[in-house]
Image 1 (tube, rainbow, N blue to C red):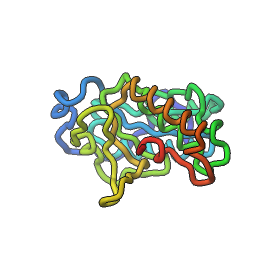
Image 2 (cartoon, one colour):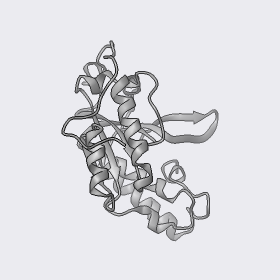
Image 3 (cartoon, rainbow, N blue to C red):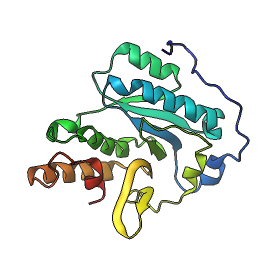
Image 4 (cartoon, rainbow, N blue to C red):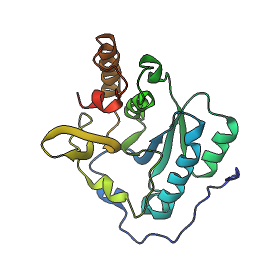
Amino acid sequence: QAAAASAPLRGGPPVEREIVADKLGHKAPGKFAYVSVISNEKYVDGAIVLALSLYNKSALLQQERCELALLIPDSLHDDSIARLRAAGYHQLKRTEESLASLIPESAWKDTFDKMYLWSFVEYGMLAFLDADMLALEDPDSVFDYQIPNASYIGALGSGDKKYFQTGMMTIIPDRDIFDALIAHFKAGVARKEFTGLNARDGQVVRS
């Protein structure tokens, strides 16, 4: 178990790579951040491992040209918060209201809180990774992809199908887009568009 500490638990050799933020200054104003989301205590360890792997591989994080942020539930224990800060998270942002409560029958209900990513407006661009992922090489090139505006998402697609994975995305936070997504989700729940065991966040952001 990682102990709480005043300094981040970082390790690994420095990455020799051109700093992406220098090239991206003209694309999206503000800071860049790697972000993840956890819904309960069970995902704390995964979020810590993700953070340490990113610090090991990301030149932007190592040279403090990028931040690491995490969306957390309001119920997270203080000792878990201390461990996450020790792992290097610059910002721990609590959910305003978990959207899981609006669709309790879904096995993937906690994924709907990913829509809160668009509320991180203090950042110019986010690279989102699920908390069960691991950085095996320098991931900073994800910030190289040009996203026209906040209504677009950078993600892996599936050929000609209107589908993309939400396990890893690059987005431009925007309060208007966030408000529109939340309104779209709540209206869809009321119309029973987003229902059932397999309902998940991707259905909302793709529609």
